Image 1 (cartoon, one colour):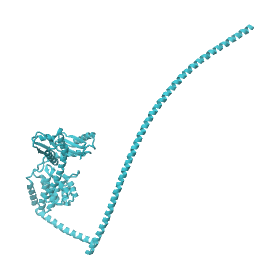
Image 2 (cartoon, helix red, strand yellow; image 1 turned 60 degrees about the horizontal axis):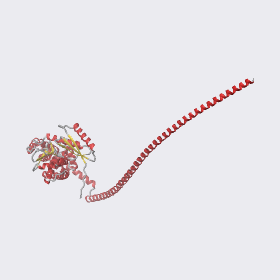
Image 3 (spheres, helix red, strand yellow; image 1 turned 180 degrees about the vertical axis):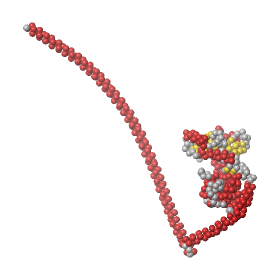
Image 4 (spheres, one colour; image 1 turned 90 degrees about the vertical axis):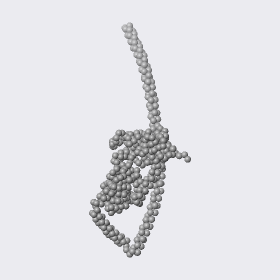
Length: 510
């Protein structure tokens, strides 16, 4: 029994010892696992911390760059705002100055208006006093005097008009066919021997061919300057002692001829001198045109023409219609009108005046879509011509109704002058009209100052303002003009369009 108890105690002790040992082993293993886990956790923690730091630094750098960009945009906007404020302040100051000027002008205008009103009142008072005085002297009121005068004038006019109409009708019935045939035959006989001579070329004679080199200049700069200033083509070829000036406009050819003559005589030929001489010659030609108009009016016995009409009469010398010189044609028509009017009992002076002015619409500086007859009538009306003259000018191509006896006379005489042998050459006029259409087409574009059709219409030179047309716009302009020429005009061969753009700075040393 005791042995069993001992054995039991021993077994129990062994079991407890084993359990204790197993528990110690498990604790050791668990501690190792815990330490391993703690180490892995520390490494993961450090890794996450490092990643978080890196992400933080990246976000901070990104924030810094975005802030810099925002600061830059803010500065630029602040600069724009400051510039805008400066511009607004300048504009406000300008507006104030303009407002001050307007106020000053308004004050001056008010003073003038007050002065005019005062003068008007004084004039009206003086007129009323004069009327009262006349009424006292005559013993009649102003209204009665007006009625009596009007009635008397109407009666006199009726009597005179009826008498004149009756005389004209009776005279026309008696001599209509015979006198008409006689007048037409006589007028044709008077001008049948004269012929029209117009061309588009002038020849400038020189003493020696050495002058040609000076006219051309170094690298052709002199001749280019001459062509640009005058719009005339200078042909320097093997023709001995001669330079050919080619242009459809007689005014340009004459300007070029006189300018070249002065330059060759003076000996100083360079671009600046060329421009100076051409400007002087243009002024001289304008004076000669005015003088020619005055001489023509004096020769025909026409007086009291406004200076604008006199100038247009002078310009007719340098204008042709179907190859017929316009001044010669107008003088012929004026003389024929006077002759025919005297034969049929119409005022010959008025007829001669209408005959001279019937084609002034062809030499007008105005750009208008009106026919030349109506345009001439408009110009004459502006210059104070009488209604019968105006009707004769406007109706000589049946573009309005004839209301006076002078109108058919002018129409008939115009036809006689144009239909006589050798008077007109339609081919020349068609050629000249084509060149004018070329130049007018280029002048329609903004920035174009001058245009010249040269080389018989095979080249169009266009001069533009450098401050309004850039180099790229000049290229586009030449393309646009060439396309319009191809689409809108009929021409032989090809037309070269050259756009010239230059910048000049001129200063004077005194």
